[in-house]
Image (cartoon, rainbow, N blue to C red; front, side):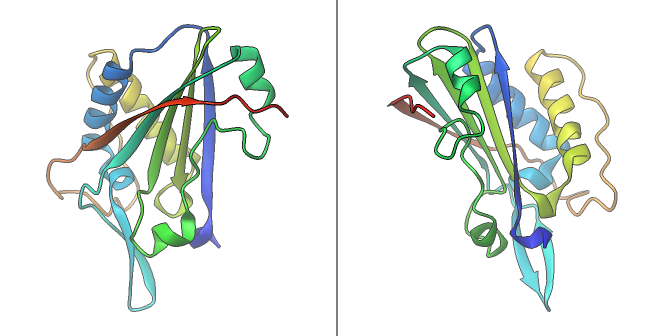
Length: 174
């Protein structure tokens, strides 16, 4: 059932990414695709999205190790490269529908992990957000991001991110 499913995507970059640019870009992109910054609620037995700008946590960590080592543990339980959305809690409206985790290995590079609740969008919907985020981070014009039956159309300005610097996290081996 989609109401209890989160999806995670992890990307690896050889270069260090600018955290401030990423956060500002994400905030702008969420204005274009606000459903990712909202919450879910159940009304009359039906699940619906609420575009109330609940916000998106963007946590950053520094870890020991190399980018290649991080790639080697991407599918490992406890790999610490993404903060999975707690889908049942999100369905109840208590947690964000999108999480972002920025990890900087000591050997260089950047790992960008994202998780979202599947009820607010499939991979195509997520790619609309990614295209808008990329354009916004580069200072370019945002592309159209029309979702079918967008529950947040006309809901006003959105785009709040909640950034937290989490410090260092130990690298875990497989």
